[in-house]
Length: 110
Image (cartoon, rainbow, N blue to C red; front, side):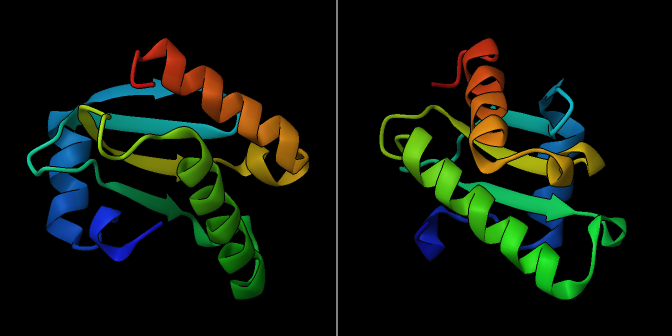
């Protein structure tokens, strides 16, 4: 994911979480709202309970790749925040990607 397609500031995360819609499954919680810029922007958040710093960085890289493969940033009408749940670490990459795709299609984001 390019830097311009990322939500980075705490205020932006909070705004999306409090003003957006919410969907959830066993791996993710998704908050999304209509985008405000020319391209869609996405943020990733996870708890320190998920694992050590190395594990958290690996999970964030995996989720960035999943988003890059599934979300068309120029055509997507929403900004989003993905929060990883503890169930994420017990599943394989392919299963987590399917969960993300189901979540995005359920919210008619993709």
